[in-house]
Image (cartoon, rainbow, N blue to C red):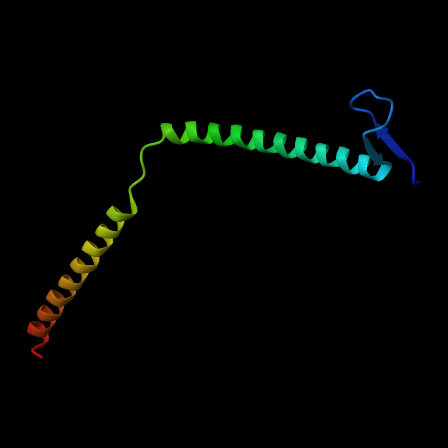
Length: 95
């Protein structure tokens, strides 16, 4: 299992790089992993593009600031109406 593969880059007859079988398998596995990751990311990017196009056609959502302002307004309105109701009850029941 200690076989080594020599790669001659400059054609001088002597191997310049030495790889054993385990290293070659690791390199091939790494390349496959990188290729599969790239493919999955490309598909996800395309799916996101399609979702963005769909979202562009929808009406714009209200911002959180506007919603917070409406909530504060309603809370103040409820408080004022509650005080008004208490005054009316006091008059009715003569407290």
